[in-house]
Image (cartoon, rainbow, N blue to C red; front, side):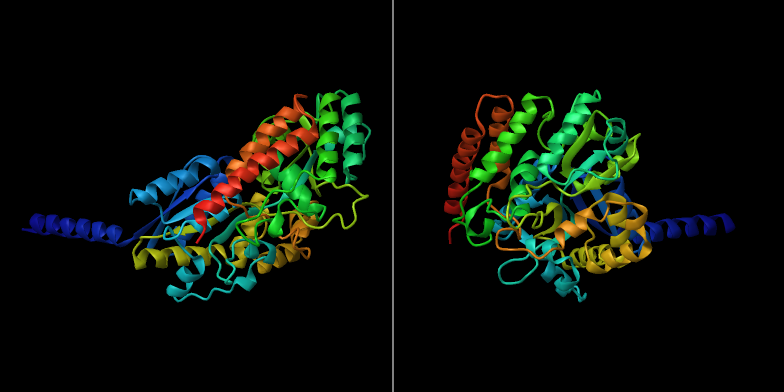
Length: 437
């Protein structure tokens, strides 16, 4: 009888455990973070899950930014989209136009009864993901900006001051020449060439990348990055390439690994390289501001946002949206957001997390880590607020193709930029036509 009672108790306990497990609501989160940043994403989900018992956020790596967005759109059409989708800033206009596919983050938070004030987020970041009616559409999760990374040990070996990185493009050229003379085969490279050398280059110099306030003023925006200033810059880089001072390493973030491996001594790229540099580099590295041309009036102004935000997909249950809201609320906590910023190199999500990081002495202990923040919190202009265009991913691919023609000497800087503008405008016309009304 006692044995039967014990057996029955075991069955009851097993059923209870099963019911408890079933009661936990799962939140699917698709992301595009590999390497050190992928570990950060997994840790965020784990820590949130440990902080409460009702919800379980399940992060899933779905490939690169370019791969994860179309995968999620296909999943939405098939009725099995994730709850949360990480989308790079280039996909913002496309997601905004995807009527019925997303739920604005402001609505998700309000429906869950959680306090949500867009004013607590870094203005340049929050503004990028906000609709003309003032409603924040996505959660500003991992925003980055363009910076110059440099190898302090390589600088020292070349007779350069490791504490005085080049601030201007003429200084970059001179530093690259000294690095080459000291034996460096890759003095300078760049990741995300369209973002760093044309998009951020434009806002940093307070000139238009595209008309209609870089796309914020309407779908009839058109590209404008073939001005004399843009041509001059791409021409300078092409000349550096001919002299072996600039070595093109490929599209996207391909060049990142060549920097933290020590192969390339300087690289313009994302501030979010910080985590991988910290983990992989066997040398002293530092971050500096994006270079500029000192003879351009108003330069430097401010750089533009990069990275990604989190979009909430439509078609889910109210209880699931409550879990999403609680997760976003958790990510916004000053101590959580500050730790994320310090670990990854992405911008602090909120002003409070920036202040907390500053008070902790992190920026003093890690010189240069405040560069991305100071570049982004400056007052913006109509030409520097950001760039939000339709079919932006396709436009970037066109820019890659045309710039590769320039670096290889098959086209002049003027020819390459003119072709990129012409072909890119065809993409903008297509997007405008598809989304009118």
